[in-house]
Image (cartoon, rainbow, N blue to C red):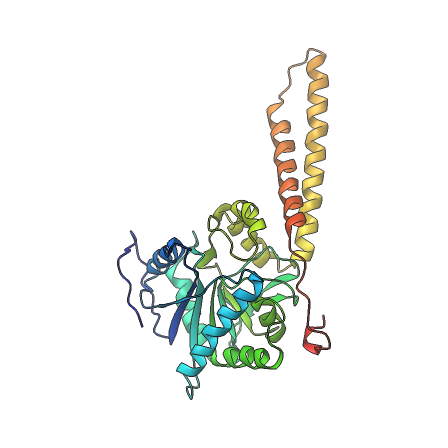
Length: 330
């Protein structure tokens, strides 16, 4: 394994990563051979004391970027399969080079991940250290401890088969590797790699809470660049931490939360507009009224609606599922 240490962060979080058998960073160098994306991932990993990792370079698939992402992850999992052949308990961390650290990063969360993956009990196939939480059909559930009570830092991800949660950073176990590669050898490339995981692991895909890492908002996408401007807005820490708390705190699906949010924004926008009109009418009659607060509320709500509408317009269509595949049915 390669040891990187040139980039030392201001403050490192001491974490025991000994439960990992390997860490792979999937990266795509620039055409001129430079790789600022990898430099950013290196700094993010160094912040959590993870210096022992291995880069795996891939060329973008210009004919099908989703396929390119899929094949890069399959190649890494096949390498892990060969490397740890015969080893029963395996934990492999797979990271993409668009990684950034979350503002809520803390050592206790990472320690909870280590403890959970090292424990026994229910199937543990995938543990996301980062995921896209704005996708339709996603719900987040608290995980019950064997002795009772909730796990404070681990949640179960429940999603539809075309909820593309992303693969920015995840730990995959021996059973998870075997299942993904078995499906790949049976069907080949059908759709995005996170969709494959959604089909295979409906009850065994977990996530750290709060997320230690996040997909970097400023790094351009190699798969669907049309969403880059939207990511720059909704992947900001003040937005994703609020939405993450809402998902976990309510336990509601995004299919419920998004319409509720849209309705609330519409009501706020209309209410603010009515307040502005009333204030202007009163001012025309010579009354002393405040315009700033209702105007600010109306503009803020309208901006929120614009962002939601923009996201809906740009959202890619669900990936086609393999005909005749029972596991691809909703």
